[in-house]
Length: 205
Image 1 (tube, rainbow, N blue to C red):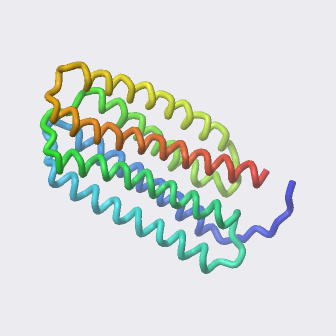
Image 2: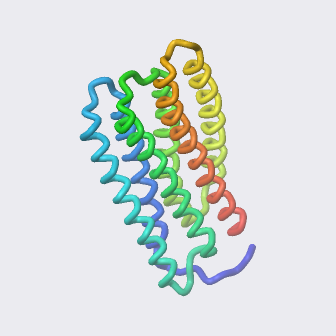
């Protein structure tokens, strides 16, 4: 095992945990946006606020790494993890914004399955971030995220098949496809987070 000086400061772990906690909240707001009774303007405003708060945490991570002499793991990995977490929030906010801007009236019921996947990924990621400090039981995290990403891929294909079945008007297909692609990209972004965590764990083992 590689010997290195480890700082006592837990600020990085706290910031990563805060960033992942933002994702849990963002996924919950995204789920609200799919409800038939949703006040979409209000939900979208809350999502913008959540995305702004997540950005602030990302900026805090960057500021912290730039001002810290000894970091808990490699600087490039800290940047990569912070950026990957931020990407997830950006993509979830994009999906909410598209639903609002496109004035989508009827959302396919299958979209809720993708949002369920996103919510589970967010919960797992929030639970995994504190474990970076001890690097314990993280393999279960990235294995489960990979399984969920594969499930998301299957859901994605089924949703596209439904969109192109002829049951939707062409303009609605174009609108919904953008939303569907944003959700798929958000799930893929969670896998990137898990890949960065795995990379960090391998380096630190």
